Amino acid sequence: MTEQIAEHYERVAATYNDHWTYDPDYVRQLAHAMSDALRLTRSDAIADIGCGTGLYTRHIADDVRPTRPVLCVDPVSAMLDQLPRSPSLQPLHASAEDLASGRVALPESAPLDAMIIKESIHHMTDRRGTLDGLVRLLSRHGRILVVMLPKAIHHPLFRAAHERFGELQPDPADIQEIVSAAGLRASVSQRTFHVAIERERYVRMLEARYMSVLGEFSDEELQEGIAQFRRSYRDTPVLRFEDHFAFVKGWVPGRPPA
Image (cartoon, rainbow, N blue to C red; front, top):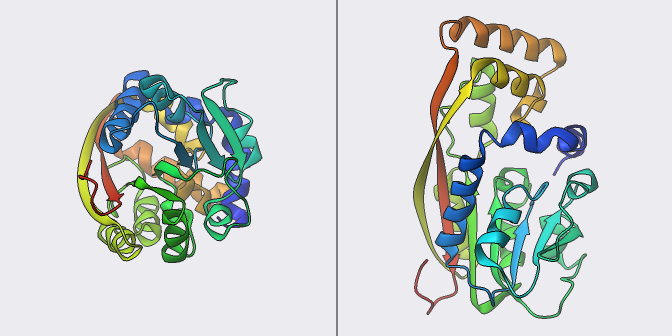
């Protein structure tokens, strides 16, 4: 994660959940889809790498009710400060690279059974090296799930934001290849979630730079983009779009795929 991106998340941490929730059903559905994809069980040692505020992690913990707390890993302390106090969640101030390299050790010596990397793979500068290191932390029953947006998204952004997103976002097929090269069996599948949100609320989310790609623009550029957005959607009081995710799964050979 670059210093610019870290500063972005420091700024938005206090209001992050308000901007990313869309609605409670969306969060619950996506969290359940991740739990289901990994076939999480109560006995699994689980880590959410790049968990942010734990918006989804807390729902996963409620779904699974693990016997050990879910490890919530994030490099931005302001995001971890938003984690709810819960015996089911254990914060760890570290980056994915910290864990992969061994600069920060797991709190327990036992390996991880399941690892979630949701919408943070694009922040890793050395994806191959980092994923290779993270895979070494998995148990013999280990599996990993990388949840990511495709290179082209249908969010109602402005043109420059769509173009910049496409430049920054890796291809899910490339991530699948990296996971496979790290020694896991790998697959990629698609999940779609429907979003309906009032236009003016969405404008406030854009103003708050709710997606990290919006942090790529100056205040003036962002306002120009929002003006373009308003012109495009002036007759649409409620925005409706589909949120498509790629689920890149990896599992230790010999274990059935999730």
